[in-house]
Image (cartoon, rainbow, N blue to C red):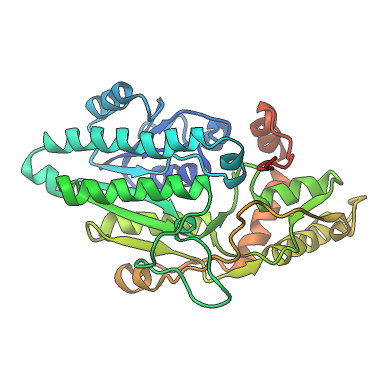
Length: 351
């Protein structure tokens, strides 16, 4: 199979590319614009592989996207390219509308044109997997879970742009018959995550003795899913998912933000016993909450567990420990991906 992966130089995308190249016989075409969060340093171990190809293309450039389809004739598309950081969407929503909405539209049209020209047999095998987020559902109270039929209530420019892309994908399935499947996942963590996200940000700031910013009282709750488990789920959806359906992927690992930060600090205390900043928890600083900060996300992954047999292999305890170890052992990668100007400062302030 020839699989076109959009956003393959990003956090989740690079994990998908690595799993496909190392674990299958598939040919992988990585389409990525290489924005600040997309970095080819995450793919050095597959860069020269004969079944891997990289195309530096902006999804919003319809001509270039169409050319990639003509050149590589993919059998499947796995669409992960997106602007993904809520705070950045508050600072500058335009990029999120362009990439997540206009870019998804451009990709859908190129995929539809390509799919329409395939033989009946090839058309029946073609798949378009759209990867989205649980943030499209809005916020939960103390109880309940997001399910595939939960109404959308996006509350940030980021989640609104992803909700729009989800609706476009479903519309292209119902209107044109394009064989699509959508996934919505909980918070991912693991190796190669850009250090604007909570876990790598806390690790790197703690190691350098900087304050560890926690929004509000740190009581916001997220469900955590290791990126390798997420990608295994995406591969199951590609292979077995029912067309036109949505599958929610979650880790069944709810934690408050302050719990996560304190656990990371405790792991650093243990794994870096000579750190001059121990106990790292003393670096925690509470800051003004993010505008529109959703209280709780929690996914019910029963559908994908029941239909496709997928379940996370990593517990939060094992996954977080291995993640902290990875960042400790890969400071060169971290330094290189942060060379573009981001230095762990807070984003998303209004006014």
